[in-house]
Length: 138
Image (cartoon, rainbow, N blue to C red; front, side, top):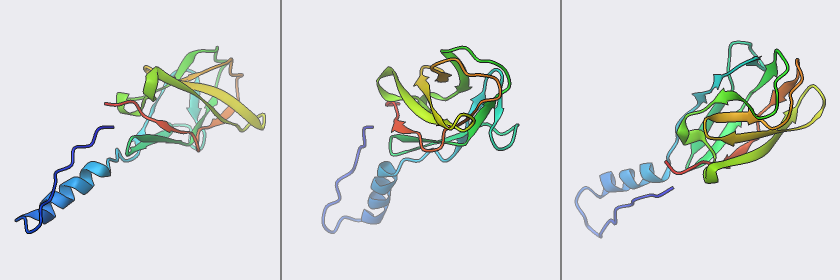
């Protein structure tokens, strides 16, 4: 994440506007972005509500989760994401909480969105809260 700051010199007229501009450049926040569910899934807490993501200062935070409504094969996209929420370096693998089986489940965030890294059985609930990663430069 490249940040362009403007130097403020002592006694500069309008220094407050320049300072606020610098603060805004340092505090980049997308706000919560609802992701698009793809395929045989529904929202974890409310069926129609897809998980959310937020990018703050180059770091992406995921929240909520999904329930599979059918068997989903490995390397299948289940959430579409805008470019600003994709992982740095072409993709990352993370572990989310498998609520159904009380364990960890691998997912991959790469071009296009979030993919399951192994087969996901029908009825399995995944919670993405706590997944945090460096977003790609946009």
